[in-house]
Image 1 (cartoon, rainbow, N blue to C red):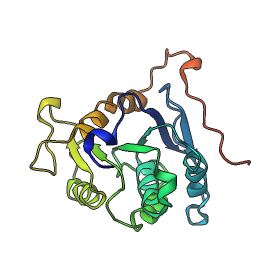
Image 2 (cartoon, rainbow, N blue to C red):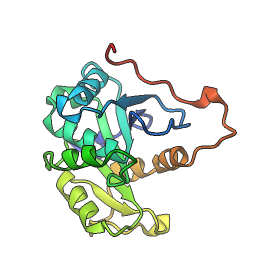
Image 3 (tube, rainbow, N blue to C red):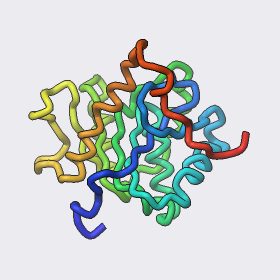
Image 4 (spheres, one colour):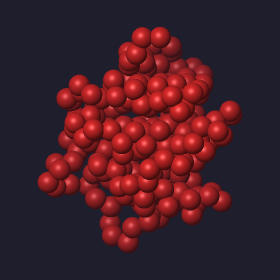
Length: 200
């Protein structure tokens, strides 16, 4: 991208990336559910390839927990043509590990650690793992924000003010927070369909 203003469009498509076994999220955004049960066989990477290889509409990736690690690994190893549609990614709590996900997270964290080829934000509450979160954000070239602070004063790993693209990505944080706190009264129709990917 030539400039920050080119990196994000006003109304990109959103794609929520989740992990099989995570709770169903009541967020009305199309999603890809990654099968990380056999992480090393790479099926999860083929699922992301299928979702993006022929996608032309500008898209922002929203991911939470272990799905963030998988998306970042995929983005660093995939052909650039697969990433042409990706305008940015919002990673929520990438070191939050769900039940039964410790081995997957350990494998994913040993993956490549290079700057991502699109704008990205790592958002998480300050935890005892803040140094690891900052290291991930720095390695990915992501802006880190502490979501436990007031929105007007998000601490960051950067001294400079966030870019327009990063600020727009932060605007999607409410969707992930809504997904993290499901509303039991929400009608089933609001649950987003999975994006059809590979034949089972």
